[in-house]
Image (cartoon, rainbow, N blue to C red; front, side, top):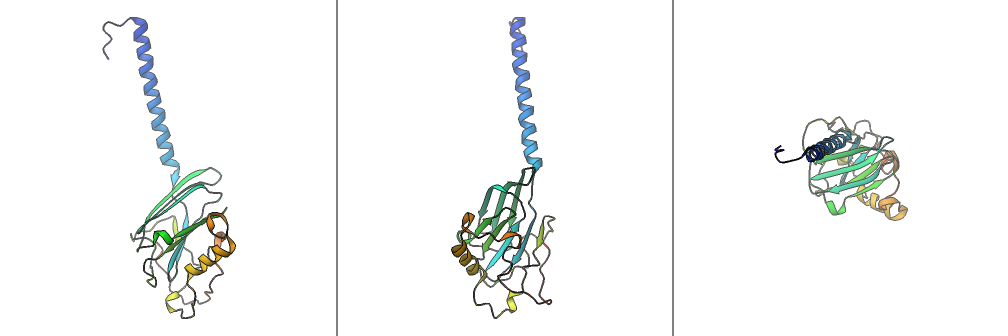
Length: 199
């Protein structure tokens, strides 16, 4: 900087202000990096049904939950756990969904999302458009069912989901389904069921 014409006291004041700006800039940069570092994908599991796809984000004591449904994308973020970690998951979906009819339900143990398929009756072999493996995403084998060969299904999974919402209520307008998600709504005893890719 040009200090010509400045007294010693003015130079000291000027230098102090500049150093303060540098310190503040470094502090802001550190905070932004800290936020970036602590934000990580939430562990999740998913399963397919005739008219809906379910994905459960396994975050305990979540707060500030935000779920954005788009035609071909799902954006999930929240703060959760003992350490109040910031989680964010952005998914390009395998196929299209109906954002207006898709719903989610928060419990103390997880956040369960019900994605209403735009094309009912079309099986999803994986959740994401990309075939890459995601370490944080797995298949919910407890709830997986080969519904394509199920001729006894007289009520869709989405209708059952909505029916439970209307009769049981609960936070976010959805019942407390716990870690099992839709577990118990449909029987799946066969050991010969087709299993999806592990994306």
